Length: 73
Image 1 (cartoon, rainbow, N blue to C red):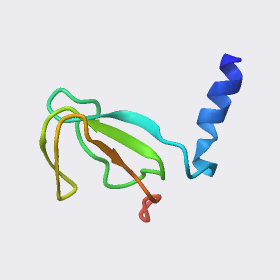
Image 2 (cartoon, rainbow, N blue to C red; image 1 turned 90 degrees about the vertical axis):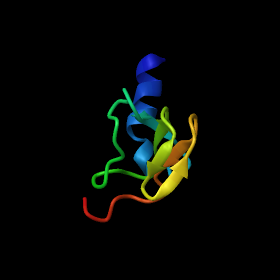
Image 3 (cartoon, one colour; image 1 turned 180 degrees about the vertical axis):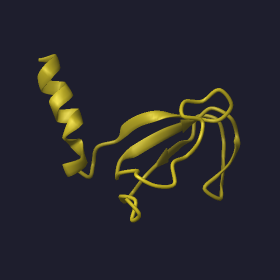
Image 4 (cartoon, one colour; image 1 turned 135 degrees about the vertical axis):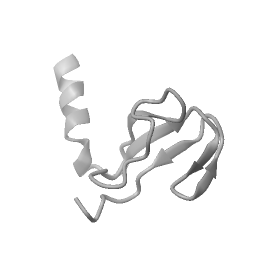
């Protein structure tokens, strides 16, 4: 069952309604930054330090979710 679920998650880029938590954004975050290239639809990052990310004011526990694939790869 675990392999079945892992396979579904790994192929989820074909399904636009899937959100994949990629990490956190903020002090001590992982990766600690918002990627500017290479991201895919559905990738999500949880804000752990309030601040401005991608030009938007964010609070702790906000989610930043890509709604389109990166056009630059």
